[in-house]
Length: 77
Image 1 (tube, rainbow, N blue to C red):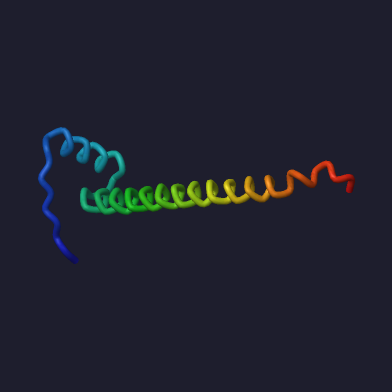
Image 2 (image 1 turned 180 degrees about the horizontal axis):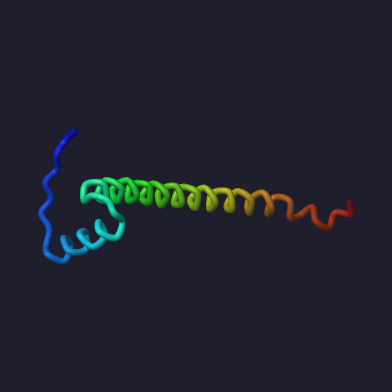
């Protein structure tokens, strides 16, 4: 296992101490979980952006196809 040293201001340290007491855990465990949570949140945001971009592409293609069929709407079929 590796060791990481972290410098912080008093506000951050006190927040960390309060959370450790409330959650009955260690500072190391809390920070590990926080980093994993943040990584997962970033991944979710990246996937949401990919889905949004794909959705816009599909919408553009659907509009093109719809416009191709527009002249046939009143063709009597």
